Length: 394
Image (tube, rainbow, N blue to C red; front, top):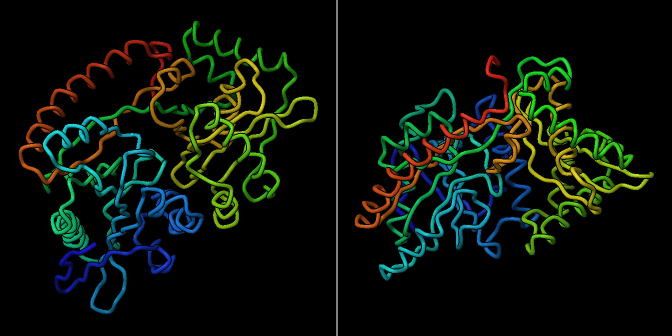
């Protein structure tokens, strides 16, 4: 790719591998509560395990800013995308409409955590530097890359609230999406949590858990530090089985999981279900203790048991959050069924910039209508809250 990326006193560059930047310099760009997904170890392991790369449709194109001494002062994690898989903000209809204009929608530029719909900073600038200047320079450079290479668009998924304000001011259009998050209200145990739910939801959860107990399923919690290669091999077998059942291929591979368990063990937590001494299912939590958040992203089972999914991926995870005093559990994108398990809707934003003025105007009108519909959808969901009417969220 080509772009004019030099502007004193900072120099912009495009990287085809995060290995060209030291972990220390990259992680120094992150806020102390930035979480695990932006860390050099997480993103570089995706690259080294070839979960991302040109052959996957995720061409590595990170945009970085350096000072006159060659030190890293800013960055945007960036990919040149040949499709829209693994993003969780769907723009297939935009691609089709762009094609009808006689223009190719792909490749496009994407800033996101691959395969992970989690909110976080996207326009990174080192604390103590000229923060806003570097951020604006990065955004200008990002647009320059798109224009110089005749790319259709730029998409920044699930940016932080601060980045949302910055991106909107720089001409990006905002798009709403809904996730379902669980909030801990200082529960002492799972029963106390159940008491916060209305009678119907409380009864339903107890029935689902009883279904699993009836099958004599036992659960083991394994921290990343205690995990073994055999644990990860089993988890991957379960995870891959889920994709197979949906006639798809897993985004992650065993090599990535083994690398992550070595480089970031304190952020990982495995839940493994067994029946009669035989392991049958597993789920993976990514734990951000500093941010008091747990992310449930992946699960799978080798045997079908009614309600095993809810127990392994949700209820065991909530028990872990309660025991560890974790404030928020994010169970992944979409899924209204999560509300029946005590999760509540949360609106997140993504930012989009389109090079074609005619198409950009049309999308702006579409997003205005979509935003109104999304607001109505969230209001309707809120009317069916699983919590008792007198329950107050923190």
